[in-house]
Image (cartoon, rainbow, N blue to C red):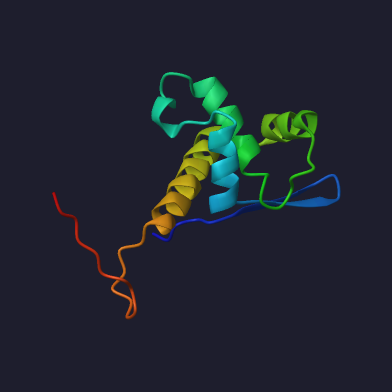
Length: 110
């Protein structure tokens, strides 16, 4: 199963590409988003997760339009699961475990 990096759709003659980038995740975190309390505050975190996906390519989309779009989305459970997967993939790409030649080796001492 391949991981998804983007959600694309058209609505009212406008194309939307939802995606998370390291910069958009930083912006989400600065605005209070925390994946760690997702189960304690699901409504708030789902709204933030949805809005954060617009930051990379559709930054100027108003909150009202984002809410309207979310309200019209089919299969919201799969949508939210996909958004969470996309968010986690972006985070994991920040810390790749690759053995690329030229990487700096480091050690920790006490």
